[in-house]
Length: 201
Image (spheres, rainbow, N blue to C red):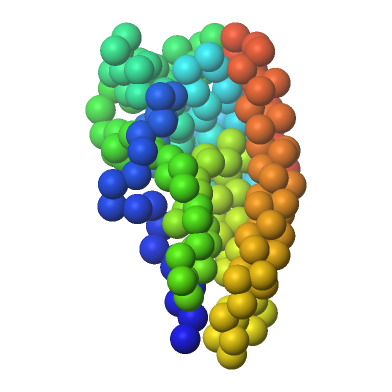
């Protein structure tokens, strides 16, 4: 009677002009080496620069996990490892020197239309994508899934365009609210050539 569309990005979404690429790598390192002087266990470091940002965390077994989100255009100026090191060095941290082993995504894309079709309620990336700088995308998706349940049940009993319009307004207002912090943090970070921030969250 009602379909909740939680399929992620559409098969042919629009690629944003400032599309980013996700990168990641995890290595066991010697804690006595320069590259070993990284976040203590239990801390997450966020490092931002003009072309992207990096998150670093040390696992309990001593491995260092590094994840990055960078403008796809950054790789016109060097390899993934070189671009990661540039952001770190510009922020006053030692380079990793990891020249191989990076895995990544295609350019992250944006779906611009979030219209509700007859008896189909899109949530999460299917309802419109904006990359969360603060890494809260999965949390947003879970919250959206919980929030849609009452409307889905109600509309399953009786499809009412007025109720759909009200739910759409509620969803958009909620998304504006949860995205505000990420947009603010991203904008402030972009004003600085580089910065790094240890976080206990």
